[in-house]
Length: 491
Image (cartoon, rainbow, N blue to C red; front, side, top):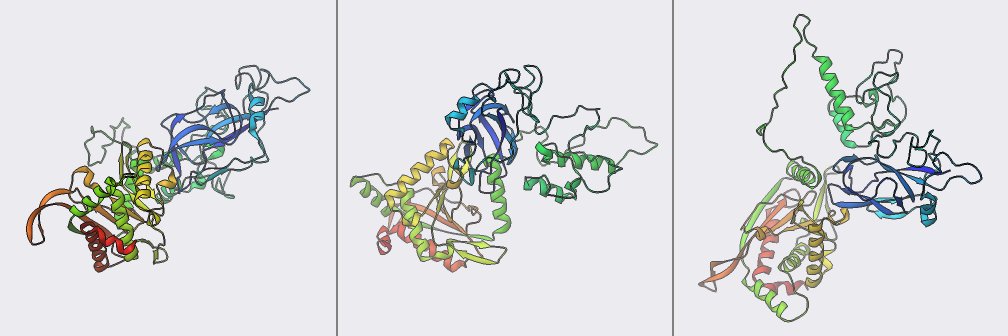
């Protein structure tokens, strides 16, 4: 007898609570092997291919491309194993291909190891959902019975058990609090609440809604955001009934309070754009930032780079030289390589420099992180910047490559601008901005000359240091730009 196992959207790490389905990599009826990628999803951090921990035949998929699913929601079901031997198989002869996938390494008693950041497939649970006979051929999976509580392939997306038709006994409208005269205790008086997403908990808490009184429309009674929103709408409607002597007339749609025109183009704040919006808002809300800036003569830095590249070997990028200057400056002013623990009211000074750099892509602004930048030379930094930039453009950065930064370098000069007051990449303490390098009149050695001039700006968290420290950091960076030989003191 084949076993039908349910594969749920795993925890993708870094506090992510939901993901959007970008592309299905398998179809219903396909044979999959253990750890074979089955769906490509987009999180607030990156694009990720999700592997399935089971080997067998795909019997159902949940969710369409472009739909967002919370962590823990079903992705698909897989029939594992072959029909029982020594007896008649159910109608349809079992699930074709299941035995081959099982022999190919399904290994239902072994885990697949760490296949994603923050996620590893362990041994399947001891209790398995078993395929039950569902009547005539065609009632469930093509060629065999369907799994209890799951629709037949192609029948649409349905989470959990089969739904009761409206009007039938036991029908419950999702998200609506049902009157229960015979029951005085809450629906979920004991045991954990069937809620996965912290966003759902917060929405209910902010509106004073008791989640124990809700019937979830998700799998196994999981309470979804739609359930909470529908319950709030129902509660609002009950609080403002029409007057008894006033005839009930169809009311026009309520006017929408918005600062944007009603007919304007609306873009959902989700995915990368939503993550950037949340992070920048939190930075402005929590960090008392200040900015200082200085103009520097970058002529000698440009000459030094040209000499390095003329000497042979891999070409050195300007961003790598600026990064090397940053790490040297952080060694002299370590206060700026820190973060603030607001709960403990402590400043945490960090030992390693994980350098983030802003990269503009078609999917929006992302900040890849170069690990242990303080231990890399100019060639290593150049190679790592190139690798991460290409991964950012193709959307293949992993969540681990987008998080954990301790200081950010923002080269907005590539956009043809001179200066900026950047927003700190929370929870870091500072960001160095670099404008364009352009010929300008400059007093050099007592005479007016045309020099390559750049504006440097430093935005810093005023909680971790005062202006003297920030000014000393920025002045040291400017000195290294004007006289690269200053770096020799730290090499």
